[in-house]
Figure 1: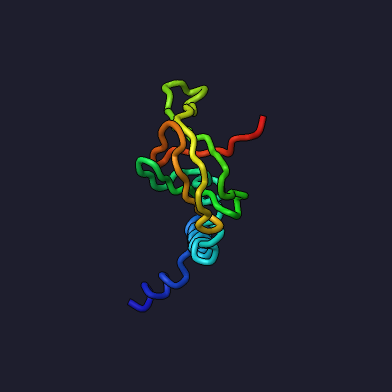
Figure 2: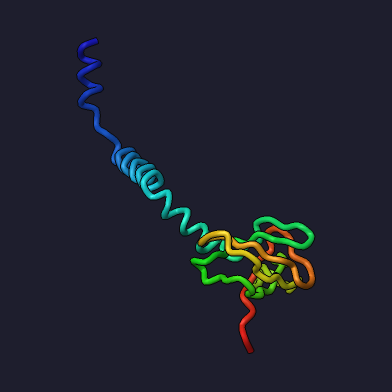
Length: 130
């Protein structure tokens, strides 16, 4: 029994296991210490401009004062349509317009549908002056 225990102590450690353990530890550390960074990336690139709640005449937008939104701004509403084509798998279809009525905070705003239709998960874009 003593010989078996000694062999287990001096057994060679697999380098792949050590690398995997170090990588897993780093990922866990990164996820726990940088939660706010992850949230900023998610909001900044994935959610910005999304309609997060919609009724017949009002919508809540994931765009706020930090993004430069202000009351009375008009935004075009687009629905994202998935295509069968691999070259251009998505296209945007203009479905309506909304007007910001209230800035809730740096990330969110409330708007009224002024024409067409606006559904949850559609996206909005500021109407640029021509």
